[in-house]
Image (tube, rainbow, N blue to C red):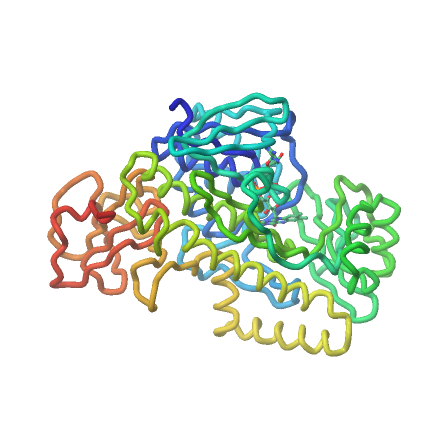
Length: 481
Ligand SMILES: Cc1cc2nc3c(=O)[nH]c(=O)nc-3n(C[C@H](O)[C@H](O)[C@H](O)COP(=O)(O)OP(=O)(O)OC[C@H]3O[C@@H](n4cnc5c(N)ncnc54)[C@H](O)[C@@H]3O)c2cc1C
């Protein structure tokens, strides 16, 4: 089959999925409804784990992560629920101990450039209307009746996913009851602190983006506690410059020197999670599988991490090498990623409650949470782990297998994340552990939990670990059997 995997939707998640699949040697093609993909501003925040994964995609001018970092602003801390005390990323065990601030169109432009450089084709103006699958593959049908055949399909076609609809999968959750405003603007008098909250007037934040632009967002008490119909009507009322100015004056007693509105929109706290990530030969990833309030800048990040988890498993399945446990067992895409999106839904709902409970009790709760974050203890660690993506773990019973392996320094001068291969596992030996010298064996110069060796999956998680004295099987690469 010419197309081993068809990816529907060339948003950030579809493009990341295609890039990872291509790197694993899969013949992949993207189908994008929009003829002109210049996207909306939306995501501005890229977290460390996402950069680690994109760092494994090499290009002519450095890794994809390096290209994103060069284009964005590095910020040392992330916010949770726009609380005054922030989550410091500077001590994290990663090559990317910061939040990267980069508007989504720029992230998408660099992803598209990477795919073009790698020769991965994107068919634009091709809108999926339906699909049908049989034992050999999937037939995808466009709105104009054009049909294509692929071995497998990844539906990364966003919140209103036609792939999800064609599969008839339920998308349970809760409708929006709160609507916020947001805009990318130029300000002559930006506030000294980014986050402001008042129990009577509401809240606003102003986050610097590259190029002297600010992302402002916030909520007013009148836009909370809405019925689903009221919320839908309010979300459709895109604020213009006059309304943004009036909103800032109500919230800040000043329009902050609003000089230009480049883009504006409204947010809602609709929270939904698809019932299954896989139906036969078709998978869902990113917003097609989960939607939530864009709080803490997580949707794009979790979606790219979905794509990395799926790609190597799907590549193994395409090659007929995948064991049951990664197709529909405990190591499957669905089994590993579903709990992550459930946690995402819960933490964004919690952030929503903290941001829009405009009462004295809401203020007390915010003060308490901000105080706990400011202590930089367990609460901060837990939230930092969630948002950064670095504590995502597929380990069972607290074991090491399933945990993310950090970017260990290697004896050959490289670091682990760049040494990982997308189409096979990598054996990392520690200390004096005897292992054969092969392309997919590396030696770490730094200890990790006192192990003798760890077998690392293409997405950087431990598949299997060996302590000193334990025998590493000769054919360890046959982990899947
Ligand atoms: C205001 C706002 C701020 C945000 N901030 C952040 C942030 O800071 N960090 C973060 O991580 N996330 C953030 N998010 C969320 C982030 O924007 C999304 O999670 C992300 O865009 C999801 O990517 P995706 O590729 O899954 O879907 P999308 O970006 O929606 O892309 C889907 C693609 O599929 C195409 N498509 C749709 N239907 C079809 C079809 N039938 N056939 C073919 N193609 C189709 C679309 O044209 C589109 O190109 C924010 C969202 C909003 C609204």
